[in-house]
Every structure is written in C-alpha cells, then in structure tokens.
Image (cartoon, rainbow over all chains, first blue to last red; front, side):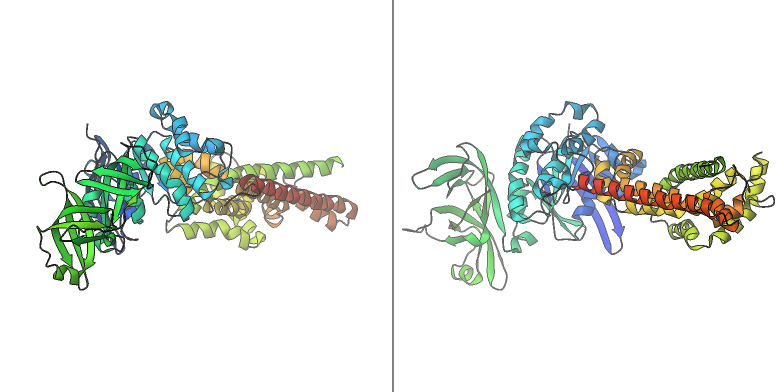
Length: 361
Length: 231
C-alpha cells in the first residue's frame, strides 16, 4: 500500500498565498526548505489541521481533508506527531507525564509502541521525574520529540526543531535525529532554513518560495541542479551517499566508496560497510584537463562536464561522476568565469575534478 | 458571639459561598471565551462584564431592582415560573451578587487563560486531546493561580458589597441582613462595641485570606521553577 502523502492546498491570507500540489514519499525525511515567510510553517500547520486551507490532504488511503467531500479531520484525530521550535511541553506535568499524555490517548498502537526504545534513543531516561522548567533547551526538545513519537504516529511533522537552540545544543540533538531517521520507518516532514540540517538529515527536498513549490525531488538531485537558487548560495554543494570502504589508521584517513568512485576523508568512527553522507561544496572543487601530477590533493576524480552556468565573474560547473549509463553521481564546481573561458570548457569535455575538502556528516 | 450576630455571619458566608460557586460555573466558560475569541462581539461582552467595577453600586442596585421588580422583565419571568419575586429575598441577593461580583471572577480567569501559550494547547491537540480534554487537562491546571485569585476576590467582594445588597435585599434578619448591612445598622444605632466586633472580624478575615493567597501563589511558583533551573 502506498503511504505517500498527497497534498493539494490553497490559502490566501492578506498578501500571502499558499498554492501547493505535492506528493511526498511515504518514507525518509522530506525537508521543506526556503526563506522565512515562504510558507513552510503554514504548510506544515495545514497538514496538521492546526490551520485551515482549502484542498485535500491524504496519507496513503487515509483522507485527512477533502473539501470535495466536506471532510476535515481536526488535529486530534490525525495520527501525526508534531514538534515545534519551542518544545511546548506541559509545564504542570513531569517528563514522564508529558510522555504519557499523548500515549494514553492514542489508542492501541501507541500502547504497543516501544516507548523505552525511544527514551533510550533520545537519552532522556534519567529525566523522567523532572519538571520541564528544570530541563535545558536541548533536553526539552528531546522530550518533545519522544512525546510526539509516543503516540506511534504515522507521520512526524517537525517545524525547525533546532532553530531555538545554540550551536552546541544543536550538535547535541542532531545525532539523535540521525538515529531516529535510521531506526524508524516513519516518514518525517522537516521544516528548516538551515542548509546543514538539510544536508545531514534530508532524503527528499521541497523548495518553497512565496507559497509555491519551486522544485521537489531527491536531495542529491536537487542539490546538484545549477539553475536552482540553492546553487547560488555560498555553501552550495552536493551530498553523496557512500559507504565506508576502509580505514588508513597510519595517516588518520578513511576511504569511502560510492557509484562512480572513492574519496579519502578524515578518519571516521563508522565501521567499514556503514553508510555515510559526504558533503562536497562547490567552492572546494576545481577542474583540470590533465590529471595533476605530484599534487598534494588526495581526491582527484575523472568526470565529464555536464553543464556550465555562468554569471559575470563565476561559473558553476555540473560534473558527472561514474560510468556512462549507470545512475549518475553529480558534483558542482564553482570556478571563475575567466578560468572557464581560458580552458574553453564545453559540455561533454572529460576533466579531472580536484576536491579540496570533503565533510562527512 | 450572640445568636443575632451568628445569624448574620452565617448568612453572609452562605451568600458569598453560593455566589462564588455560581460565578466560577458561569465565569469560567465566559473567561475562556473572552480569552480565546476573535469575535467582534468580544469588546461588547467584555465591557458588560466589567461594568459593575465602574458603576456606583447603588446605580447597579437600582436597575437590578427595576428589572427584578413586579413590572420588570426578570420579575415577570420569575413570577411566570412560579418563583415569586426576587427583591428582598435571599435568592434576589444571590442573583444581584453574582452580577456585582462578576468582574472580580472573570478578569483573573481571563488573564490566566490568556497567559497560556496557544502552542501549548496546540501541542495537546496534536497529542490527540479534543477541545474539552485540552481545556480540563491543560488549560485549567495551568490557570490554577487564576482560579485561586478569582475565588478569593469573588468571595471577598460579595462579603463586602453594600450598595447593591441594600437596594435589592433590604435588611430582613435571617434572610437578607448580611454583615455589611448589619455593621451599618450598628453604627447608625451607635452600638460601637457590636460594630467593632463585626468590623474587626472583617479586617482579620481579609488579612488571613490575603496571606494565605500569597503563600499559595509562592508554593505554585516554587513548583513550576525549581531553584537553579537551567532555562
């Protein structure tokens, strides 16, 4: 049975209009990404039923809203979990009672749900008797996530869950979110305007702009699309899903492998065979016609130039890795337009990508 | 305390107690509505509820007397229902007190409800709690200090009301002769010892209530934010 989330919603509120037709995959993390005021939060609230827009929302066969049938389920009847920036724990209840609040109301599925596993996963076992006011921001957010999961939802909606936290707190929670993502088969819709969170967590990406969908698709595809606004940002770059190939403890390096090549990265704690994500920023990639000899760069890969997108001073190259015919892995390279002209780059050219930095996520 | 004084104190306590209970029953949904609504009717209703705070009690009493009197609409209704007439009865006093003390109950409740963030109630909604469930398991516990203040103010103001009570109730021993009226009568009759007993008792009562209230609120705060809490 398809568990895809079908969304067709329209809303006009003053000067702002939301006009969205989307089909989101029923698994993995879908990031709703865009500048403030683009309608990310409004869209999420209408999915939860907290705000009302005209149209239709269905998760698999379950129709949550269908104006044609005059059907609108209020939020408390939708099997979803909802986590917002401010945690919004109940201040008059202990952590344990906060967790039980939704669990007791969510029926048999929630009773059978292994809450202990989520409590372990989020590392909040020691906080059960505490009141929310005595928790740190990061702890509160973890409790809020566990509280939402305790209802055994079929969809988890997260509205900038890390935005209210400072960098160390964010770093504290991100690994928990990654574990959540790996462990649960639960589709997650994740609203954010932070590219690093998208790169770490998302499988699919929806770009929103002024209440409209600018682009939607798999993360790796969208990040490598030079004509999207993402590619013009300073931290534009691709995400490559790979697995750990081997470690080289003598030099403190690890090698990761993916369709189309291997990359050396700083030594990782992940074991050989583990899946990892690597982010390669466009500004860290340059190209050469010949394989560089006696270079200090450890990562040089043969590529085929796919396209060139130039403005006045810079050129953004899309490079294709791997054997022709196989599913492509893309790289972006940002170079000066002058270099692009000097090298007389043309789509189809065989080049070598010289990669200065690879960040494992 | 002599029997007459005891009757006065007991009658006053009954009036204030019953009024407070009725006000909590009527005032809670009203305050909740006022705190959450965006209806254009809100300012009008809010003004009506606040009116007794601003109007001279004798003005309020005068109109209530007209309304409840044999030719007033409320009076005709009560007679049609077979309840007789309300003025100069205990029932009339209760109705008048409920109206006169309304703002003292509704305003603290409304403020307490308004202080509850929308997102906390929305969190309850996404945790499968329906509207009534949310109200009783989130809004009411979070508004507890508001309920304490509303009860105390409602009770104390009813005990202290004089103008409305005199207009509607008169001075019938055992029926409508409450503390404030009895005190006035003692002073009129130059019975200063009796007046002192009542007045002194009132002062002591007010002090005890206010100290208890402040202690209760402090306990509530300690409960919410433990010392040394990381915020």
